[in-house]
Image (cartoon, rainbow, N blue to C red):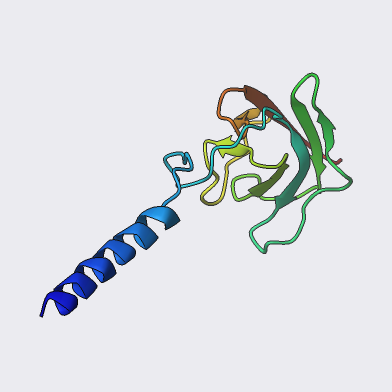
Length: 135
């Protein structure tokens, strides 16, 4: 009886230790994304899709990481109220606000703004997206 009791205690201890050893205390943000030590914070690519999820750009977007601007020209006749922007960011960076659907770019005099947040969540850079329509 004593051997069975000791065996049960040993199994409980072994189970507890195995569970505790698997637990890692990696820091995560509110979205459950891993917070890393990376401080890089920039946009490396930009795409703009129409309601049919096809590109509406006439050429590659001009991304200026120093001035933190993105200039993109779209085809004449593009529905500017129903566009889907897509950003390519440096590793571990996030975008604020998140893009959850279509975006209205119809006010060409006011650029849209998004903030890129570094992997360590300490560096924030706001990018302005300027849209022009090809004549």
